[in-house]
Length: 201
Image (cartoon, one colour):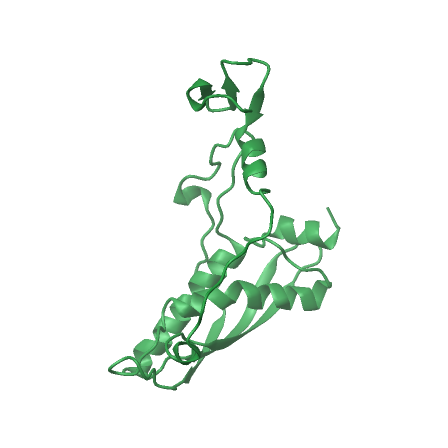
């Protein structure tokens, strides 16, 4: 608006300015403008290729899913997580870490999310308002441990708990793409969202 910042106020619904009372902007409109700043990103840097070979925890994840085309409900039938853990000091614990990461990733992919109203207020602020996956929602998770020791760690270990969370949403979204021919573009992939992407609603 080109007005001094001290003249701008927010009353939980809309931004206004005392300079021109006709100017009004909702939180949603402001956020949309901020995310559309655009323009090229320029930069310069150097990367030591040897650093790229160290650290990190590569993996391959495969989700077998079933989709009910009438309700949009996605069921993960089986999940395979091939994970390079460096060195599995205690393989049983590492398998548990991989399974836990996949379970959390399924929650992020299909159930958990923050939903906001038109006024910018969070609509689901408590755990009672969020669906979290239960034991009934988590399929058989088949962890496959790959051991390529990390040369920069004294024991050669790599991340095994947090790392498997990351690929889950992509694996499920790619499985849904194979079923529907439509890319899922946001999380969580709720039944309503899946039906929307399929053009049903």
